[in-house]
Length: 66
Figure 1 (cartoon, helix red, strand yellow):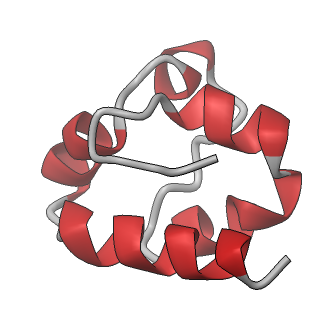
Figure 2 (cartoon, rainbow, N blue to C red):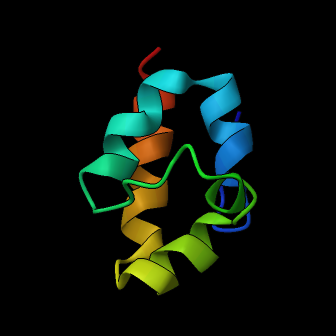
């Protein structure tokens, strides 16, 4: 799986639940909320004031290491 800013958070968590830590560390504590699971990384990062490119890079690096 390759993650982009348009990837939906729920799809990432379904494929790799261990990535939740990366969302939590930037303040996305609402991962169980149906609305958050339907958001793209870009939309969620905009709402939380974080950099989507940085999160995408961390997630892809994590997945590449599996």
